[in-house]
Length: 322
Image 1 (cartoon, helix red, strand yellow):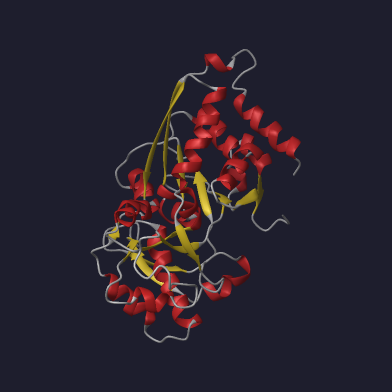
Image 2 (cartoon, rainbow, N blue to C red; image 1 turned 45 degrees about the vertical axis):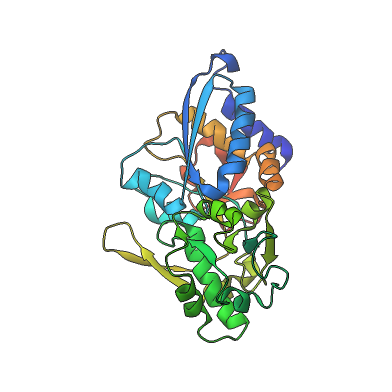
């Protein structure tokens, strides 16, 4: 896909009609999104408002599973929904509440810390399990039932157990952390880290970069980053709550892929389509990359025929050569 084609699709999406200028476009755009998307989505919205200054954009961050359940369980509406795991959209929203999910960005797991964290002068990519298991060290993670970063953290534990050949490591890390330092989403733990209440935090690399944190890069066999490692990642699994109360599903490890959709209950569809077109355009991709998040270009989808026309030139169906 050429930049010209992407830009063409973007501006077609913004051209609501031939006789309406940008100053005539008004309305309120509601965006629900993962906490790790707060910074890039805010920047995309700023760029959108440069074109449409009279559009009010309201964004609400939460763990991706909580974000989806606002629509599926609580009956709340939004115009755009961004998830840190596209499978949250596929599993909790499609087909009743959404018709497509677009895979648009990637990430990786890291261990973030500050210069005041205990044993920070000693920790590295090889000895971090021993450091985190030290009696005087505290670490935090997000809730696996509410946030993809939570179940990805537990997958990281399992993969680390195999990679470092440390039997029982995953359970020891889960038991060491307990529930004291588990929060609904990973960004909720940033204040605890900065205040020194915890020393380390399992989080996405993009968020650590955005907040200027120190972080340990994990081996590719552990960090859920590379498509080439997908078979290895799939050996890790975590049981999480499903669509209905009392229902559970097994999440298998996979390379990190973010998803975005426009829910069926969207109230401002033209605005939503234009905003997502901007996100997927070269301008939006640059914003994502500046925020420390690699993009998938062109974006991919398994529901290509369900996409709004303006988004089709910016995406490719799954299975096509990229």
